[in-house]
Length: 239
Image (cartoon, rainbow, N blue to C red):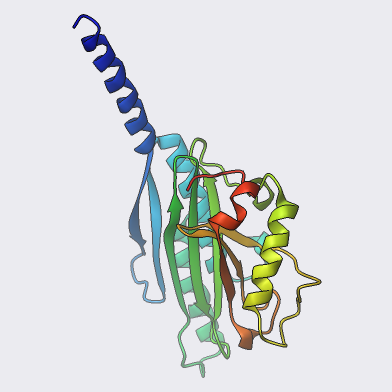
């Protein structure tokens, strides 16, 4: 009887530590807009919990949204916040409308984010942006962002794997099963990994945006590799 209480306290302590780790980060959806804005809609995840980690993640998400709303060369971005970029987008449209009064079609931008996967080690987030500035069609782009949960830092694609060449061999097989369009620039022999790779509940998602390896008419190419086929190649085995 003497040893039961200390043992219970030790167990409760480790359960408490585990719960703290699990609750280190959570996400809620936020909608961001400005006054007199009817062109841009932004709905994105917002990290909460450990302030330093959450701030780091939210800052990187914000930079992605700001870049999506920017009109002009990427190196000319001056907006410091999403609100500022929304205001700038609206001003750009008003200027364009003044210069080309015959333009009747308004610009529009829709940006949505979702948490694809979350574990104690890694968080994968997708940011989908659709921006139309009066062309024949708008531009749809999806960006996958992978974060370390203990720092909030963005994880480069090559750090997702401990054996990237082994993963690439398996991915090449799934790529061959996915594509059936003769317009796709890549084939199995010239296969390369996409810019967008992320975790989801089933495995690893690979996504090629429009124009990345095929013309606009082909659209987005996306496929998921089951975790059982690639777990030995992954740096973060969080399933």
